[in-house]
Image (cartoon, rainbow, N blue to C red):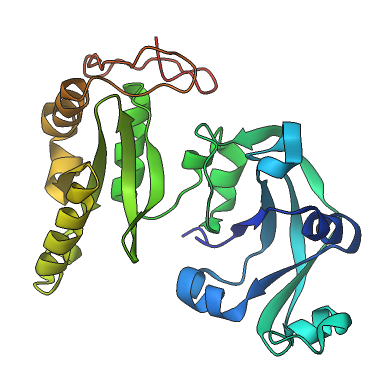
Length: 274
């Protein structure tokens, strides 16, 4: 089985941090973030870097990566000696050191210019990704649904974070329509066996509904056995009822036409429309 944490996509959102990455070849991650967000998918063998809006022509893309050489746990004051008097001087970080940066043959772009958290992924997915959503490695069910959404040219965002009041919810798939928003969840069998999860799901769905999100849930049987007969038609019907998918390149929202079973439509970069 491939190591699901072979590659860690890290976020670069300021010039000083990029200068450290480029010149000194290290990156820092708070220990608390690793325990909360990455857990068993740490340490990585490679680091890749997602550059945000301050980087101009290179913004909202992954262009550089490097093999990890060493990881040590240090304090902020050890990383930045001038910060010894700072209140955060004793905050603990993982200092990840790596070899010289290598440039990807083709950048991995974000279609919606979204902000991200860390993305742990496999080397195989990193090598073949065309856009950010191809990197997510959460479950086989999500991967299967993602492949079908692409086949039917349905624009969606994977692992989209939505804040409702004081809570953050991570959506398996988010689809932004002209007259509303759709949250798609792929619930595995183990998930459904957990009776404590049902009331939490209800609270989550209700919270998202108040923010204009329409939730669709598909279980293992739906995704594995009824993808073309049930999942995709249900998604398409809801998209069309909400006026079509908002398109980042076209002014007119895109309605969904269901492809025939077995028919594969060749996609160009970001070309999720006809």
